[in-house]
Image (cartoon, rainbow, N blue to C red):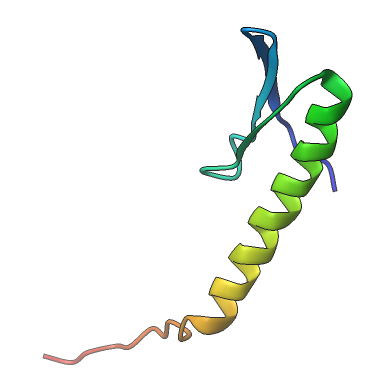
Length: 66
């Protein structure tokens, strides 16, 4: 799976955000550390999203006649 991340450096800290995954942000002390943290952040975000989907009841389309 390929996913785009925005990466920048701020005050000697590397930061990243994944626009496709709301709230998925992380940081690292250096670029290599950031990449490790980014992988963990994306995996964690996807795990939580899949757990939430499994718990939520399925939405069904109901047709009403008035």
